[in-house]
Length: 101
Image (cartoon, rainbow, N blue to C red; front, side, top):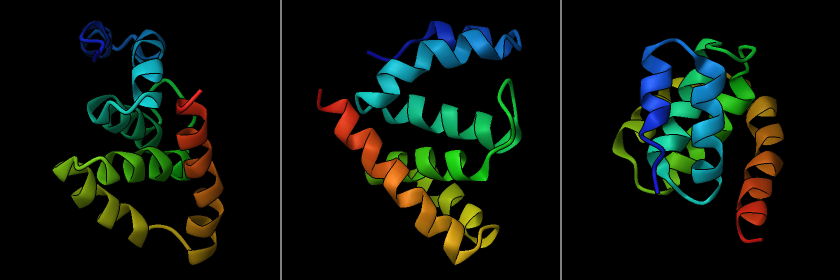
């Protein structure tokens, strides 16, 4: 289930609480939570700015069929080197493996 209270925390700029609300559902396949986490890493909201983490979560959301994730992912790829993209792949696989436990 998507953690709607995360949206309220995010609106209040309580990014740490928002992230905690979304992490578990994101790891279990919720593409809205995945997009939200990717956005936080991409913008450095409550977490250090991290293109690889943003790419990881946006890729997972895109693969889950989230249309806006596919659009953002295309833009994000243009900001990353091929090496950075390749380095992100094990992180992506880890989320899929972790979510099955």
